Length: 158
Ligand code: HEM
Image 1 (cartoon, protein in one colour):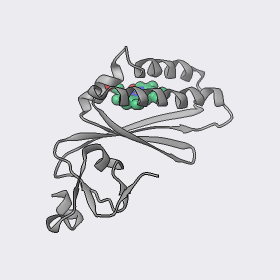
Image 2 (cartoon, protein in one colour):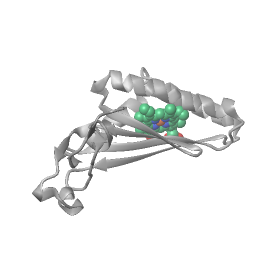
Image 3 (tube, protein in one colour):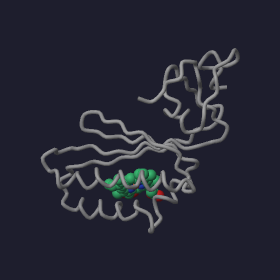
Image 4 (cartoon, rainbow, N blue to C red):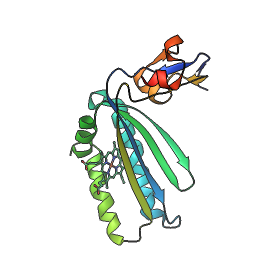
């Protein structure tokens, strides 16, 4: 189990970065051959991104809730994320094309989504107590210990 840090810490956001939520929803479980390829496409991309830090990816965490699987990702910039998505020599662009080829069956057995947020210093707040050092936004950008001037959420945001 990852070691957790007993003091109160906050993400140390010094520069803008991007929070990217991406995922899939299994609409029809039994049509496995329709949703499984989308499910299987994600892992190799995450491996590719961790292996190539120059692409601007920082880190990711996967959450599952009912029919929906969400990968929470942190990126250095919107431009880096956009560039990765469109690069023909990387794993994403072929997966994009393959998805729409499969989707022509029109059953809607799998849904996909993404949401992109630009996170700016002064517009974000976080707190971690007894959490592993590599968790969440703090894990992506580093953390600072909460002090007298950052006791409340409002102060940490400022
Ligand atoms: C590390 C994982 C992934 C990242 C960072 C990522 C990122 C992105 C981004 C930024 C776009 C928007 C591109 C643009 O419009 O300029 C996009 C579109 C798309 N992605 Fe991904 N993606 C990932 C995984 C996947 C997977 C696993 C699939 C497989 C189903 C997929 C399928 C698609 C499709 C079909 C689109 C086009 C959607 C549309 O505009 O109609 N992506 N992705």
